[in-house]
Image 1: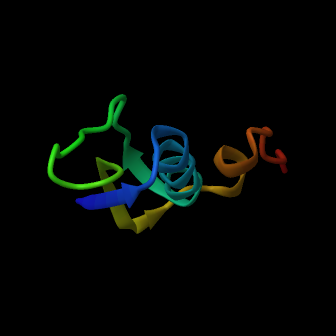
Image 2 (image 1 turned 60 degrees about the vertical axis):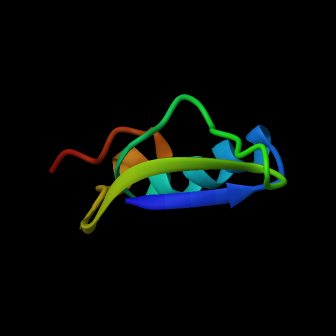
Image 3 (image 1 turned 180 degrees about the vertical axis):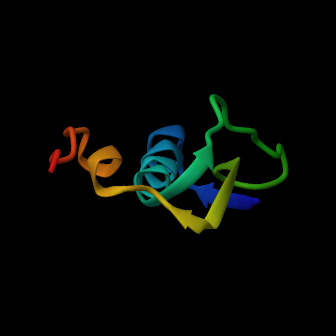
Length: 65
């Protein structure tokens, strides 16, 4: 589990997108706010042991041999 602390929703989702482009990730669709703290938090779950194949990172189909 990774918890992202950011100044706004846009930044939190941008960081999540970067993580999802690199590793298998269960993404979140909303952020949370703590009334006593500035900014937002977003939790996502990723498996750093399983790197995505190159075709999934770029959105392009892999070469067939």
